[in-house]
Amino acid sequence: MRATVLCFSGLDPSGGAGLQADIEAIGQSGAHAAIACTALTIQNSQQVFGFEATSSQLLLAQAQAVVQDLPIKCVKSGMLGTTENITALAEFLTAHPDYHYVLDPVLVANSGGSLGDQATLVAAFQQLIPLATLITPNTVELRALTGINDLDAATQKLFELGANAVLVKGGHEATPDYIRNALYIHAELVSETTCSRLDGEYHGSGCSLASYIAGRLAQNDSIQQAVNHAETWLWTVLKQAESPVSGGQKIPKRF
Image 1: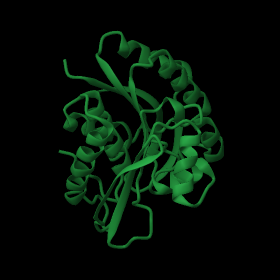
Image 2 (image 1 turned 60 degrees about the horizontal axis):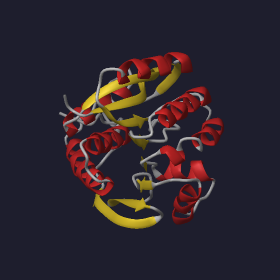
Image 3 (image 1 turned 30 degrees about the horizontal axis):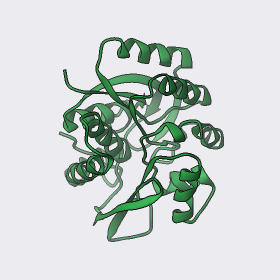
Image 4 (image 1 turned 45 degrees about the vertical axis):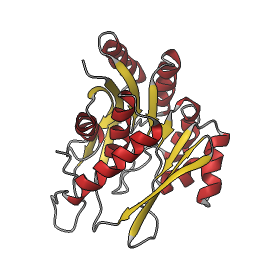
């Protein structure tokens, strides 16, 4: 069977982000996606209205059932929703140290909707940082996680907290013509990529990128190879994204 990525993420009813984005991106990477659902959200492609988190007991029961009969090679997390779920995931990862782990530190949706109390989640995320093969914050999340505005200093702070590798995504920066991503491994900058900034906003782009990376890591790519493949793929699916609402966020066309 194909190498499998186990995703700890929330269900987005619109299918733009969350678990559906994970499943589609991982499938496109060549791996198989398994799911441990962290929350049911109330949202469409443009706005988050609320959510109800899965209990940590139910979350772990989902994960433990999956690992009994699927060839898990990598874990990916997105929305976790509560500190209890973060702690449960940390316990699960500690019990399975051979798995790669991609941490997408989701704090808010692109629409600005809450996916949990940010200050509480930021403190709890420190449990997960040393366990991650790769952390994929956008610059808003990076500043929130560290409390530091300067991006270079904020990135180095993650390494002080135990990070192994960090992909800093620049889509939220005020660069009108391009987006710059920077990959750091063991606190050293190993690659920078830039791409033309596409028009509009996208629902689920971060989920898609992190999940594709996880799929490639599950298939034995190096971190740098996985990131390069994922960035190339993501730009293509964003170029052909679909618009549910005129002028609103677009949904990446991952197939």
